[in-house]
Image (tube, rainbow, N blue to C red):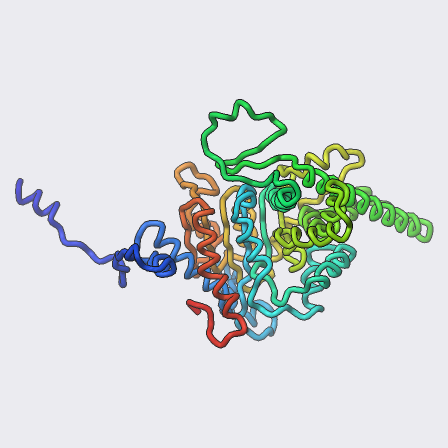
Length: 465
């Protein structure tokens, strides 16, 4: 019996990894950069973060296009790009980066990380004709004319790191509210998003329409500047819709007089998609804020314009508009903007959510290589992964959330589950960092994207290239 137990317990270890990383700590006295650089050998989620840095750096490097598969004789067969897409010459491409953000993150300092990713980049801007063609796949020409004027006022030197953003309902409202709260603080020292406690012992004294909170973040739900901004935004959207509707009906009436035909009453070309709403919000933001500051704070027009410009440039929605990056929001109706839209329910703003889903899926399908950086779970993770499913999966994927897979939730699912669906490519690189996003995202941006910006135009390539 003793020999049986000895044989069962005292067994030899078997090597399972060809070149395992030896666990090794970093001296606490080391510089911060050295500590973060040593995460790969720490183990647990620190090693996952180090892996995310590697995958993130790969997102910035030109790479061969995704492999193309077609069905022949009932089997999937890999074909060269020339076979699948005409005689186009194969070349290295930069992966199109899709970023997903849960709404609550835009009420924290993670908003600044997203703004940085939208504002900055390392790739040269495309030719105007190519840029125009890309944007026309997303929005109608009249909308782009307003966007072009805003971009001309502050033309970015490089194309954005980001190709598209998916944010859940309420996220862009947090972005705008933070800008308004900062302005309010400059004027009277009030407002602002503040760090509180997780304790709910003082919740009984709160009023439903007063201060809001999520986690340990507290904020004023309806600061005067934000309310005035949203009301003016909705008014402009409704006026624009009525002008487009009137013009369309007049055109139809003229065509009927010239050549009578059956009218398709299901058509609604004056409808606005959520991404178009947020594009226009970014385009109009400087002007809207200036108007609000004159109206609410009684500032002189010149002072209001200067403050409005500074405030607009702190937002993600402004830089998304300038860079022509769509902000998709499949759960748009969950956001605070509905509190300002519903009082105008007659005639109401006509929203077309399907157009955005179609545009998001087409972006993924047309891209020769894609990458995903998904912060949080829920609708943002679902829609980004589903879009990449249309192209047989993303090449590079980073998931950051603290969800667990035991309940079968979308957020908690591991990348291997996405792999089984074809949302992540079999030959791709992926990692999940199981952590709360605010702990990880600033470090990831600082380790991957900031060095790339500093190195652009220099002889030395960014770290990890």
